[in-house]
Image (cartoon, rainbow, N blue to C red; front, side, top):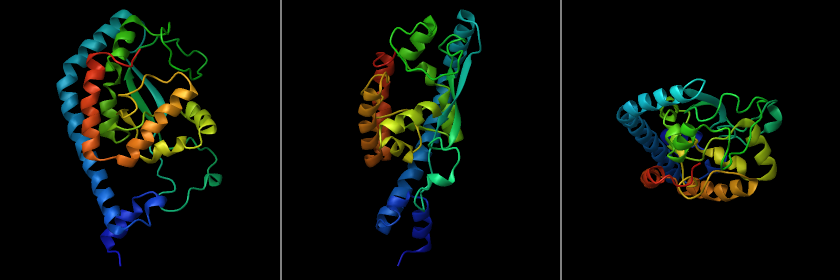
Length: 242
């Protein structure tokens, strides 16, 4: 018979894992807590160490283009629905695929980049991107403010990249398993990000999805640490970014 502690742990897992052996349930819950502690510690240290860089980036962004230093946007986060009972989307009028949150970045595009408010795929040689923004993107430095999202609990350091609600809605229509990415918190970096370039098409998303689902299946503290380490050369040698 399961203990009260095991019952509580089971209630924190998706419905497809509730019937797993009690030892597996408790181990996964402990792993999730350890990953959260790791995120808080690393994000706090990262903020302290990179703060002088934030000031420099802010000055350069403000001095070289019109507009704010930071850019905010709504993204789709963790989806806890169906964690205890099967997911019933019919009861939800507005389903964006997970808990919406506001992501923070250093601004890398002109302020009029999306005048019509429509989401546009990233592309190489994008004329909407400023000169400074191009450098920040290639080094992934525009993502630094997302350390605040990590501390707030919106994101983890490692996980599938969070998508905009309108693109998420489009992609899950074309890719049946796409919503499974939301079983874990989104991340600043991830298994897909250290191996592949930015998405430019649905086919690119499908390739990244295979990496994301593989990460979710094998997710551990050690796995996250390895991906963080692999992210460093991606930033230093400007691999995979535009």
